[in-house]
Structures are given as C-alpha cells and as structure tokens.
Image (cartoon, rainbow, N blue to C red; front, top):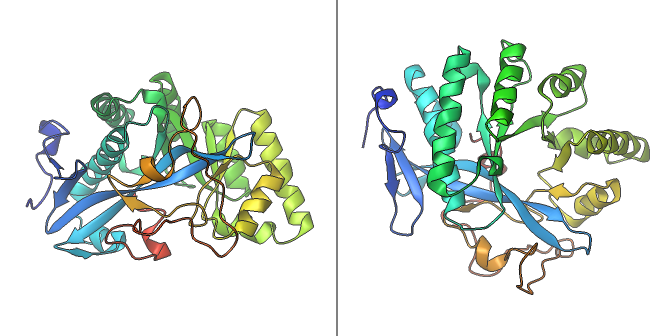
Amino acid sequence: MISGYDAMAAKSIFSNLARETDGSWSTTYAPYTLKSALQPIFRRLSDGRFDIDSFEGLVRPYHGAELVSPAQLFAQVRPDDIEAIDSILRTIHILNTGALERSRARIFVNFHPGLFRTPAKMRQEVERMRLSAHEAGMSPDRIVCEIAEKNASDARLVADFAGHMREMGFRVAIADYGAGDSDIERVKLIKPDYVKFEASWARHFMRNSAGAALIRVIVDQFVREGIEPVFEALEDRQEIDLCLDLGVALMQGYALAKPELAPTSFNERFPELLGSSRSAVFRPPPDGLSPLTPGHEPRGLKPVRTFGKRGI
C-alpha cells in the first residue's frame, strides 16, 4: 500500500505497477487497488459481421474485495497526486490491452489537458505513453488519446498537444460531441481522428426523422474529412440498427458487450476477424437478449452505468 505518489516523477512509470496472478496489471493508491476494465468498440464489417476495433479503458477501484465508484476514489485523491494517478491509469489500460495479444485492436485512454500546465509537462506524459505502448508491444498508432474537456483553459495548448500526439504516431479522439458551437470549434481546432458522440444527445436526436437527418449530415461530413464517428452507450438492438442506417461503423455499448476486468474473456468470445483465418462470426443479438455468454459476467462488476464512461 502507498499513501501517495509524491516521488513518482523521479521513478520509472512502471515502479508502481503490480502483475496479478491472472496476468493483468494493476496499481494501488491509499487503501485502493486500481484495476482496468476494458469495453470493446466494435466495427461493422462490409459483410455484416462485427469485429472488435478498439477498447476503452475504465478504472475499477477496489477497497479490499469491495468495488467502489471512481467518484469515491477521486474524492480522496490529493491534488498533488491526481496527475500521477491519471498517468498510471493510462499505463495499466495500455498494458492490459497489449496483454490480450490482439494484432490490431486499439485502446482509447482518457486524457485531461487541464492537468498539465505547460507544453513540457504534456510532452513528458506523451513520452510516458510511448514507453507504455512499447512495453505492451503496441505501436503508437494503436493508442487513442481521448480528450473530454469542452472548455479547456487553453484551447491552443490542447490543439498543440493533439498535434504533438499525431507527430509521435498516436491517434486523437474528442469525447462527448453534441454539435454545439463549442463542439464544432473543438473539432476544427483539434482535428481528431475520432469523434465520440455524446450518448444522450445522439439518442434524443435519433428519436425523430428530422434529428436523424441532422446526425446523418454530421456523420457524412466527418467521414469525408477522414474523422471516424463513434456512437457509444448503445443499449438495445434498435439503437444499433439506427446507427447502421446512419452509416456509423464504430459502435460501443451494453447492447454489444459490457466492460470486463482485465484479462477479460474477449479473445474467446470475439476472435479477431479481419486478416484472421478463424471462422467465428459475431452478430448483434436480437433485442432484449444479452450478448454475454453464460459464465462471462464481468468479475466483481455490477451493471451500473455510472461505473462506465468517464472513469479515466
């Protein structure tokens, strides 16, 4: 157990990591053990099959054997430690994705530019991510840095960071897009590789033909500009079908697969399809049926939505 990360800057980023008996990576902070949950982002292939394109890394804090919410953890993190916690969580998500030994899958990791006060601090963190990717056996282009803030204190600093990320070979995503003026300006300034649509906003607009038409225009525009739209928090087959009708290729949500603690069962349930000789076929289940197979309920997790997105 450790009481803080004060000395972390002077140490290797791997010095606070632990390898569990199941092969997964974790870390600790105060009384908490911090583990990775990974949730797949699926790509719909031209033949109708769904293949895992990427994962999103989500923190799962444990106090002993009890799972607690990320909010409970972060409420107890000292201000001086938050930058280091943010960094080490990205590290375990990257390492746990690499441990799956999938040949192409990317990992989306949250990044909070407001934590870093200077370009030098940001560049230091990018170097840490590069080292984590190397340790995980992953090329930088398989790491997607997901930026959540809509009102960063220095928008130009965020844009410069995104540009540096791309120069280093990483990819960049914008989270919680809702087509407001600030969202449009973020896209223009940051020029991301991916845009993740804010779930409640997208769900509201997809309820009627006029709203769906607006989303279709936005999706088409992003695709023409080389930006991949991602729709998340999909809860049933109808929402999947709406995404397919809109031409959305990348989808995430409980209707497809719930998060699982690393090391996960995803290799067995969803073998790689692209470039693979395996014959397994995954198609979304009929509405009302869970895609989880018996025995593969995420270990120690309750299906509570507040434990999903935005867990860093």
